[in-house]
Image 1 (cartoon, rainbow, N blue to C red):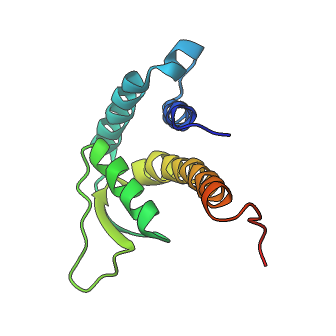
Image 2: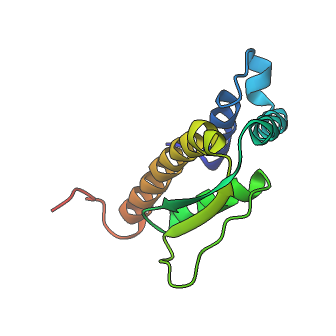
Length: 135
């Protein structure tokens, strides 16, 4: 059974991987990883121009995670009038979005999804009915 602490540790390790951490100590230093990602963003901004990018996300959980990740790195997600709630716009350097932001988001979303699935099954099994097998 995955605990919330296990999930948080996994999320920190995923973040550390996206900045090329070379030692085990760096993997456990989530704040240092964030600083390195921010430095990489600044480096990308110096080399290429930021453009408006559109991200279409599957559900509310992913939207919330993506927006939080963007804000963590000082990016300002927005939505244009008439866009669906699963659409997020972002003015960002394409190389940062493609090489760091999106891959990190997909791994974080997968880890969070696994945790939510496991928690949902456990709660249903314990509180509703023991058999959670699909029909």
